[in-house]
Length: 146
Image (cartoon, rainbow, N blue to C red; front, top):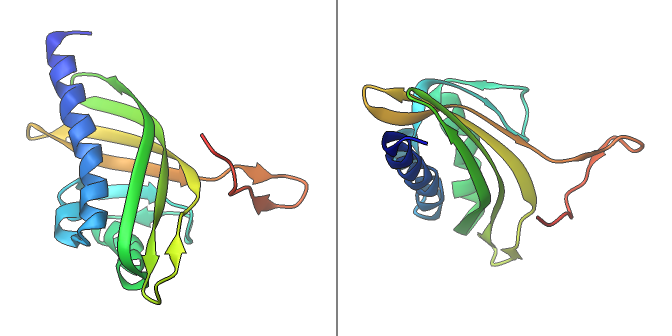
């Protein structure tokens, strides 16, 4: 890995960490700065894809209205960094306290991030969140731990 790739990897790790900060602070504008305007997101909630940064933010908005406090953890982030493109995968868990005071520990999901360096700044251009599927029942398996 070149010295520049090491610098870029550190920047990307901080960038991914800002997702947790934006969620915990309920800061949609802060989150918006992390994504390319034309992001395509495959999240666990319908529809099959969310296209554009405004669609991605609409996907996050219910978190802010449902939770009084938000926690977000990313674990085991692995990155591959090139000159203009990078991708990574990790486990993530969203939790917190609901508006009625109920604590939610959340479930672990699998996340893939694709980033592109745009005008010198790394931005998320694609993400995909998934849960393993129990093929025999057609339901997601949400009680697994990394």
